[in-house]
Image (cartoon, helix red, strand yellow):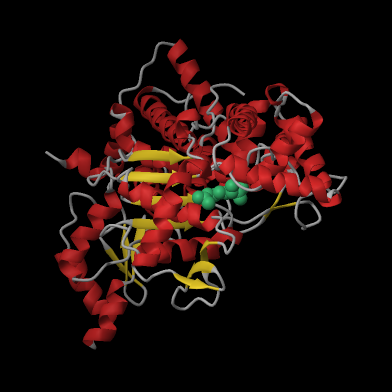
Length: 550
Ligand code: ARG
């Protein structure tokens, strides 16, 4: 009993068994060459130093004492004292059959379900979605999928920029031009924004009127609020079109824009002042965060509240009202300092409960072919739609989307990457379309086998190294997903899926499936089916469609 569950996390189980003998983490690593088995450990070399004994002697002792016969072939000591570990074929076969019998079981459910707020996407009203919003949307969507799959409650918070002094200028310009705000769309409101900015710069009387309009908006003037609300509606429609195009899970229910915190800002300022955390400095209310030269501004000297105050109120609301255990902010790296300040002040204020986690997941920029910030030919910042159009110029929509998302998720988040539509959409190499192709190809094989009426009975033969490599990879899926849920590094899942797709193609080369016979054929079809499950689930966690045909 219990074995079937255990084998899904083979490395974890093995680690425990070795640790019972070594007392320290054996640090099992994938073997560097097939002849060394599946895993290697250098624990004997490490212990030898501490115990002052020859490493090979210690390795021999571990090999003799470790209770792993039900999982491994006889252990081997190699070279100066490495331990080579080869899993038994029947154990590996059992894992793959387990995936086949219980496809949903490949993602282990958390034993500690949490309420996780993910702050992502967060475009600004009357501005086009920029590349930063695009990356945030794709990365945040991946986190939401991974954490939900593990059984956590994910509360998406789309912190859209729907408040601020720019709305005074926008509303004033609408009234000046006599436009019906409801007739605008995202593009025309962006154009309006530009005209308003220009007008503000060149006309002192208009600038004054715009400033008075900010006051009217804040004090709840009916007409001003109505126009402001129309502007938000117009942008929302534009954002939703982008979310549909991207195939992300965000809906209107996830909207929690800056404006919802308005009524909380004065309380935040008062409480911070009363606690002596915030002090008045040159007329402004600020917090000096220990170890940080720049103060965080809670209230400006003119009495207004800005971006930082709103984020303070948001932290308080997320832990206090939404009852979150963990808050993840998916926002470009240039805002790292902002978040380190907001998080520090929130902790000083006692708004973060014991064990509460605040994480800023930053990410780099998307660069043009020249290695500089990606700009359109006329020098404008690239919008979401231009990026997606560029990818769709060279590939079908489903493939273009996979290409863009995978490019975003497959390099370390903090790195900048070059937007190269041809490379991203290629069906070879470490790309989204390559993984889609691997899924489509294995689906095709399974389709043919089904047409012949041959159902699969599980993996019974696992002799070829290519079969073993693939099986070993399949057994690691749950572990990799768990690692992404904790460490928030989607590229680890991408690398894993790429390795799996590559192992699948080596398997095809060495191990004929449809052309083999009898038990070998049935067993290989089972390997194919389990691989398809893992690829499909993995792609789904990245937010990428897994097509059956391509
Ligand atoms: N609207 C901001 C931008 O486009 C991002 C907001 C991120 N979230 C937050 N809680 N500050 O840069």
